Image (spheres, rainbow, N blue to C red):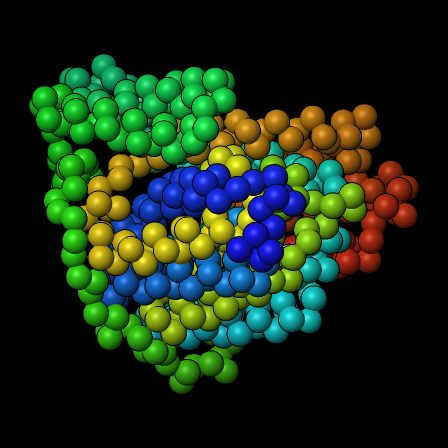
Length: 452
């Protein structure tokens, strides 16, 4: 194992990797509950989706470990699953079988692009300052996701606002929603304390302690589950359960409309978002882990991209939407994960979740929110590496950073960063700084906004 994973070379050990793998899994275990809920709106069997999501996540994560030896974990991408269900199926009127076919075709295209170095070339073409900006932007993005998941940040007349404890008491929802918001805030402070004291496994401990506090609150009656409002019991309903049959979604694809223009547009949309979400996640997480070399390149990226592509293809065959590298991988990296063993551990836990789903589905979002907030802080530290003195470098980096959380998309952040970088370099006469591929990328992004 030492020869394959190179623990000593990367400054880690088996214990650290195992803690990192468990941490990453716990911060993204919500996908096992959320993905069936979202894709189920398209008419798919939710039990089969749960099984397909767990299996595809495990397969893709194992591929990441074996092909690239990197600590990145994969599962069904958020946003892409919503596009699958609400836009392609409910909006455009296609059957979910056709949507799965589009995901399958996207996966095949990605396998080809990964093997021919196209995706790797795009990764390497992005300037160093923009790569750092991607890392910082993802930090803000996952912080925002964590605050949303915990309901600390809510919808308001100003688009977003702070949760109102006074309002929850008046509405009679404090014992369901209000107390979980309070627990999330306490969890952030607990996790921050553990990080400040450099306690080993600080993020994982923060998740478990916050969850345990929630269980105590439920036992003494301070927290009252309200399933209709989305607040479930924090105590697992059991330990072991048999996985649902995957039969209703296995290989259920429909190739009858594969040549239509609308179908190609759907494939392109999946392809575009997945491509730049994955590249952004790899850039951000690798930057945080100091895995990029002196030229800003990620050793083993071809294997990482191939794992992502194979995961998407396998996921479509099993019955789930696009599989992509999860930004929550940064939580495991923050725990010290540096090798594929982190991905192996998370993959094994996805398989265990098939038989221990009552435990994993009981992990509340308010317990994982502190992990996302603290990881966001850790990724934010990269901002000092940006060359702020050069405005043609700093301004595109800033645009990239704010676009991710405010537009709720990693790919949009990259797109706006690339476009502004190329335009600013052109109008200031610094044409030599623009590589041909960056120029092509800017044109592709502009064309994308004109067409979609």
